[in-house]
Length: 361
Image 1: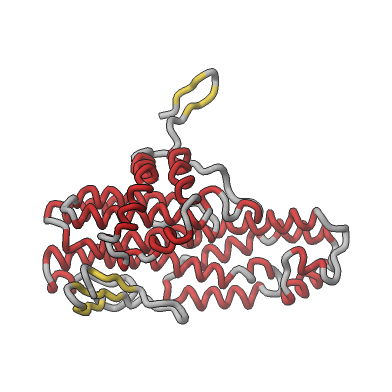
Image 2: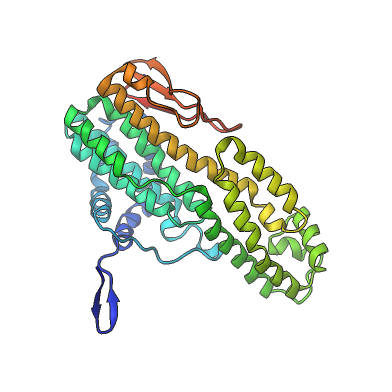
């Protein structure tokens, strides 16, 4: 509950301030250390370099565990210009904080400290969720970039966990905040996009012509459409930016349609709006990419739950677990001492959605 001090509302500790301690560590990592972290479950846990990395990252690990226990997380503000990208919580290097938590979790699990392993991974998952929630499209990419190593780590250590820890994992999965729907990113992304364009328009003359279209950020087709709609008049362009908000709203509503019809609905939107709202129409491919990211996170969560059922209750119980992206259960293939689980979720040009359980070498 907020308290009042000298007439101002005091809302208590902010997890974002604590995460910054972890971010300072990841921003200072050497390229070789980052590469080792990206190896994920392929990195040998008994490698002295891994031990050194975990030791170096202990303050970052303590920070994200502490931050995960705090209910409020408020970043510095919504990204409204290109200068904001890659800074603060939107710096891609901060995914390394989650990766070192995954390495630490693997070491804990190997030593029989399953609860400590879960604490590390779920602290990383909470950070990923907070980066993506209420964010622009790049924030959702970073959210997924943090969730993938976390769920891969949980899959890798699953057979090493005792029954009590498996039950604890099941409870934690149940209360883990779900990713926001893909449509939630359209509001922040449209404000970022329109704000960036508005700033560039205010920096040029009253009439836009020739190469100035490209400098502002319009590609060939968009420039042709915008010139036809406004004649290059800056005041009309600024008014058009305001009028395009309704088109972004329609884009958001289509983005959450069932996956089998979502792609078609987005294509129809792009075709219908290309000549009247080219900025919104031009965002369709990126919007579909965000939908894929959100669906991938959903698939990983359900796959891990099904994997837990496999380890705890056996093959028959596993096959009764539905794949939300297919007509039946998940695919199951025995590999080495572990398993490879596949989802029916597919998107042309993107890798399959699968999860390795245990040692698949």
